[in-house]
Length: 94
Image (cartoon, rainbow, N blue to C red):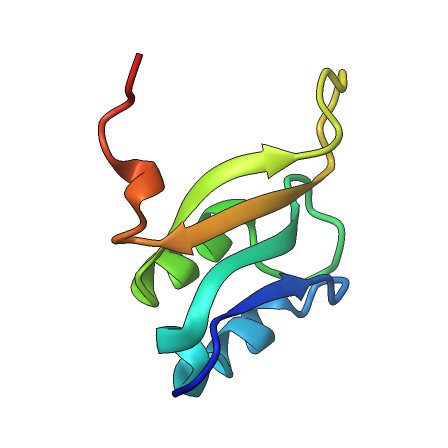
């Protein structure tokens, strides 16, 4: 029985390459925290929408941001992605 894992991706513009290589681990992933550039930081790199779409294609959904809030011009955020069937996406309970 394979143990569940969490993954932190911080590869300075190479996040898409890491995501491509996740295939054999997808069933074990509980969460991914990925550094995501909001601005164009690296020539020829992905944009934030492409990162979200690539993880969506792996059945991982954007859940939340960590860290820096209230910035005048957002640049980089750590983003949490969870499996699409995670109970955290169920209707909010008040």
